[in-house]
View 1 (spheres, rainbow, N blue to C red):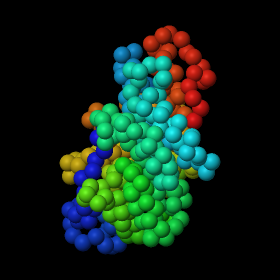
View 2 (cartoon, rainbow, N blue to C red):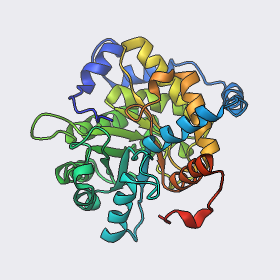
View 3 (cartoon, rainbow, N blue to C red):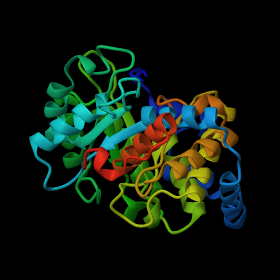
View 4 (cartoon, helix red, strand yellow):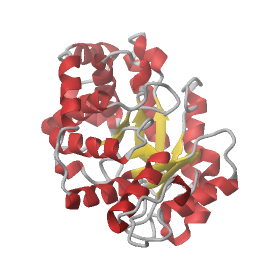
Length: 336
């Protein structure tokens, strides 16, 4: 896995699509002009993913692929250095009884825990090996996003300085729902700029839409376009703190935006559903959805992630069952 580090100039990206200077009026004209989402059709497509027959060999590949796409996450007020270090060790070897299990994509923590993760990963860090683990940090007053822009920028800069490879930011949903799309755009651009490192590279930026608060799939589509126009490397459904979190219809809607962006510009944007995905069978349906919506090229941790913690445990157990014929039960894996 590689973590993108090339500098993205979000204004160039949006100017190319909008055809000129980015203004509130230009954003409104573009976003209001997007076609509406057929909610019934989105649900039907999502339901269809569950009907696909997955052969044993494909399932084995799918389980390993899911593991490699997991952002192993702990975002609790009770997080301690010890808990975070244990999670980082689990990230490198999800199944201590089977060294063939792949490592996860990243460990996701609060910014003040980044150094603990880096120390614990050691040579397993993504900078040291191709199959290494990245460090993701939430920022911008996660999960509410209710802070001034200077605070959000400082939050981001701190996490990057501590060694975060990826930043998961939250948009201002209040501003978005008021139709102040220029405010949301400007904040994403500013946070993207705060992801800059001294060597000129950038931390990877995932933009969390908190789709459970956006009310409609039309809003999900608009927010997805807005985030990409402003410089997102990934768009992400949820913080995991608001219900509903990730759902297949929402994910399909966001993937369709990614597909359309790629058709328009040739640029690949990543996708991360987060929250509520706990079972292997559900995660496999997401892989089917990715393949059928944007193509198999996106079936890589560079372009698709799962924001999860308990999901990894279930995948490890299912993987063991396929190899041994026995299901060990939940006490086989560590409790995160």
